[in-house]
Image (cartoon, rainbow, N blue to C red; front, side):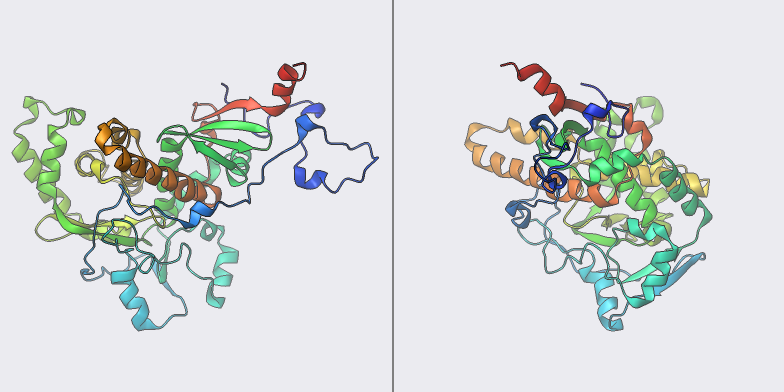
Length: 402
């Protein structure tokens, strides 16, 4: 395997023409497309199972409550943009429909999930033309707040500057082949087959959504409030936390985490739709993309890292580190899915259903979002997160004599 990417230097004989373009070439011309140069897939093709979302969703939280607290006011450097909808309907959607209620079967209910992108209205056109950042939006808010915080704009610019154009083109026009594991998947681009690190790509995707859609998220309601104290205790019991006796009693640390995060509730709710009630319970998580709920098995460690790993002193560093912690929590990770494969034989049917569910989510939610919302960074070209496995012209060199 190697980290060769689209756009790399190659000889003229290796240049590949797409099958669509080759069909227009008149017979008898010198532009014949040979078998080893033909692209046999079309990234625009869709599958029927994209419309058949599995019933059992291991990533979901269960039934939801339609309650919501009072909305925090807009930040000082933010403006409000109204879409052309009735005001009463918009107000209701902000508190109920926008969270994407979870049905009793455990998956996002289509009746309560808003459209993936807000509709473009006449009032938005001028803003969208002048501001290319709006092409990245994945938020589903009836009212969109235009954030002018310098720290956020700087983070957005950093994402744009480190983007790799050829890699972005590959993700936009790829054909999904299948999942190797929750962490790895196969995708074809033109005549090449790639192995992609779904965990790292999804983590980068959620980070970019958190920065580009800053303060414009819906809310995923938890079916029952999750006590921060209990979540902190669960995290401290995990060897991954690194807790030692020198750090002090776990109970004292858990109480400190609860009190610390309760002081940050207004900012967390206003900017990240991360809601904590007065009793120290987590009640809501940000809705980043449609039909996706983070693996809640990682919630205890996320709460611990939220209190210990975020730089709360500097604004830019705070937003950046908090977004990275949220992105890591939301990313699809094998330790929360592979256990399903180790079930007993009597649970084979349930295991197959769970396997189908996470694979459906990877293909039809995450990789669909990679096409339109991800600006892949340049370091993905050299850190092994995207590997070229095969190239059709090279395969013909090996097998054409057989």
